[in-house]
Image 1 (cartoon, rainbow, N blue to C red):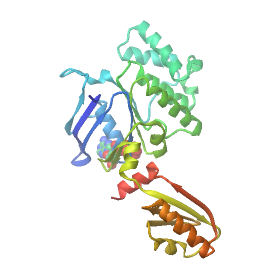
Image 2 (cartoon, rainbow, N blue to C red):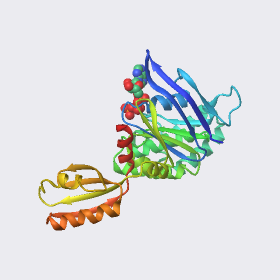
Image 3 (cartoon, helix red, strand yellow):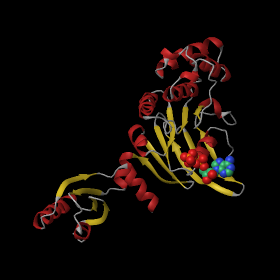
Image 4 (cartoon, helix red, strand yellow):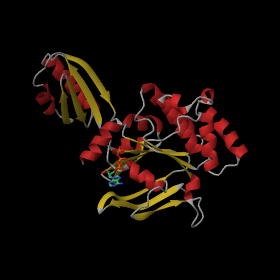
Length: 302
Ligand SMILES: Nc1ncnc2c1ncn2[C@@H]1O[C@H](COP(=O)(O)OP(=O)(O)OP(=O)(O)O)[C@@H](O)[C@H]1O
């Protein structure tokens, strides 16, 4: 049974519908990415799931909750722009968050120690939060969201504003979190979703336009790709290959030419034969699978 079932979820602001009927489930113990460009509706969706915003219509069912039970105790939430008291130390902040979440003093202290260790900031326990790096602040925010042992943790763009070091720290932490709880995180960065998540939900213009595991998405949008690179301008190569059997689409970008093909072996033979016969200045030949970005562009274009 899934942990959460979302049915017919909609949200309008002053008559403008921005979330247009979402239906999906969050599987227990999995990491799901809510992926979409700016304005797709990721924050609005997470706010509804976390109880911060009332849906216009639709239902959010936690399978572990009794009828009428306050679901917020099942949820940990890290907003896109978390706010901290800079003068508090990381340890004080977590204990304070624990007390606010209803933990007894002793329990809040113990949980603080556990989470400082889990998120890798134990050494900075006594340091003022104002002196933390961006990555450390995000890790503290994740620790705060976990303080009451939620069944689901939701993170709104947890790595988007970080430099490459901070981003790596938080992505590695997300990998570890998957063993502790169910994770839903939003991002507009496709690589992050591909790297960390088991399940992917593509949100576009308030609708889920595609969903599944990376393997399912690849299978559904199976498309083989050959990337060629030429020395110099290599004029007319696009026209030359566009007419080849097995080639469905060509995309030219400077010295690079991408060919979407329906038979990689057949296309390979013809391309190499043509390059040899016409003495084309071919310097790179690479065949590859569709990336998440390719799939996203294809789905959105549809
Ligand atoms: N309180 C509000 N009042 C009116 N419109 C809103 C409100 N909150 C969000 N919207 C609109 O809803 C749409 C979705 O916004 P949302 O912030 O959920 O998108 P997002 O995918 O999280 O984008 P971003 O990546 O930029 O944060 C946008 O068009 C936004 O302008």
